[in-house]
Length: 243
Image 1 (tube, rainbow, N blue to C red):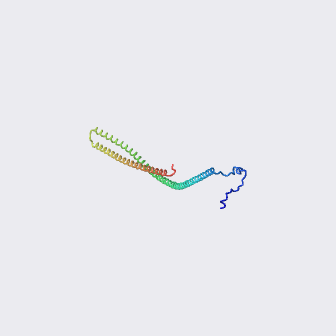
Image 2: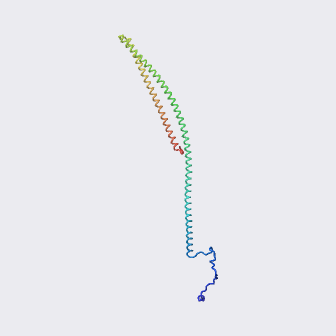
Image 3: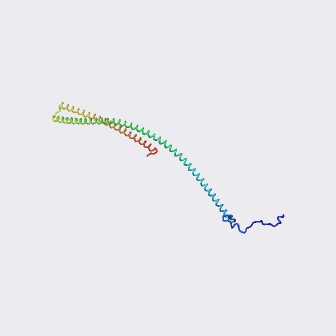
């Protein structure tokens, strides 16, 4: 109560004649107060917020890059495994195809060896048969020419006899018998010629049949060779690294 009735006294403060704040250097001055201090604090807050936003953006960008890198690494690992498995399967397929091609080549060599043998045997056999038939035909042709000459001679003799008989003007039994004998000889010659001609025709037909059989054998061998070449070409085209 006594304190409230006493008048308020100012605290004792030592004063100087010179202003101490005026004698301080610029760097020891107190920070500004009032609106300028508020403005400075707002700028600092804005800078801090901006830095935090930048750090957050950098962190988010770094996280995105890390996730992208992990995704790419995963895809790369998967592709590497696929490539390795593909290389292994291709190597196995290539080895299997190489073995198959070698086996096919061996089989082809065996087939071609057998074909050459069969071709040689058939060619030699048919060549000898054809040569023999050609010789026989040549001999038969010569014989036929000789027979034709004999027939002409007989015909000429018959004409002469008829002329002689006409000139004599008689029908002697001897002349008639001679004429009949000559006629029989002519018939025999004609019959022999007909038989020989039939024999030649039969031999020619046999030769033609053998030649046709030989041609069919050659065509079958050519067809087998074309099929074999087509199979080899298909195998080579289906193999990897084919030209």
